[in-house]
Length: 338
Ligand code: SAM
Ligand code: SF4
Image 1 (cartoon, rainbow, N blue to C red):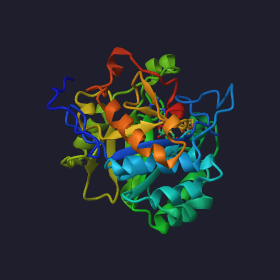
Image 2 (image 1 turned 135 degrees about the vertical axis):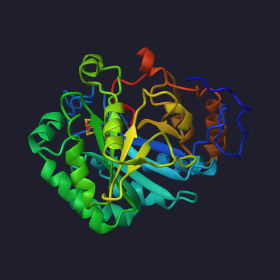
Image 3 (image 1 turned 90 degrees about the horizontal axis):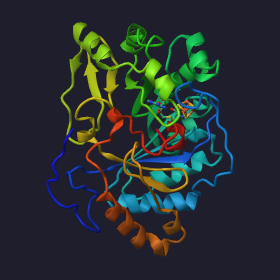
Image 4 (image 1 turned 120 degrees about the horizontal axis):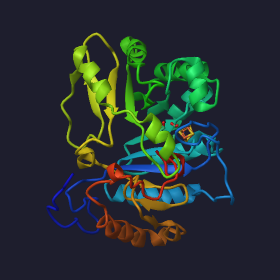
């Protein structure tokens, strides 16, 4: 895909707009690399760490998000690893969601702690919730994630619907010959539930090439089936991000497709990422990590941090080069924040 630069980025104290005229109101912030699951496409051997990493402290997160909010970011997604593993997770939510300019605090979870905490996290300020559920079959779920926890995770989703989150989504990584025939199960699940199920194409990362080759399946198979069954593709709202959504009058929920290998996926990119140790990643699959942590140590560094972020945005490329097998810096999504 080729994006033509339309103008130079807008300068300091303005919005985050890159040279391809894309705006970035959305920050995905990893708060830990650690995860208790062993999803076979992500951390098949579980989490291992050679040196003990120091993840961003609450004060560092406060400064970081304050500066991003000043640059026009209004949505923050907390991710990981498994973000709910952090002991101060509720305090982080509370702090981030009360920072001036932040309208939506979201998070992505494997659902392990959802049942016990859905209410607490909602009260702390989470409004949008994405829960990963790669199969609705308990044995298959166990096989994929290494945990026999489907029942609890689904109970956590029910609880979240009762508690009243604005949006509850389920993430399903589409896996050839594992869950690529499960569309009907998910459709049944959302017939009476206001939940969006999003099929995400498996992405190649530094660690998973053999698995990727074996299991990657294009989301086109789901699209074809949805259209055949009378689902309608929703008109894309400006700034809505790269997911394509389908609805059907007989179903309360919706189905989304995230197809990073599709043409023009990056045209709708609206997000920047920061790793759990404070590196800015302009693209999930980018080959540069820009350290920000040295400028997160005191409030009076915030103007310098702002300048650095704006300057670095000049380097954001038009697209990832996944189709050429270029996965950038990431060994797996747990290490960057998926
Ligand atoms: N642990 C949380 C979870 O699993 O929801 C949050 C972090 S996880 C890295 C975020 C999302 O990335 C999950 O929905 C996961 O299924 C997805 N993911 C991980 N590795 C992936 C890959 N190689 N390709 C596509 N999606 C992936
Ligand atoms: Fe953990 Fe999420 Fe990776 Fe699964 S996808 S291993 S839950 S970080």
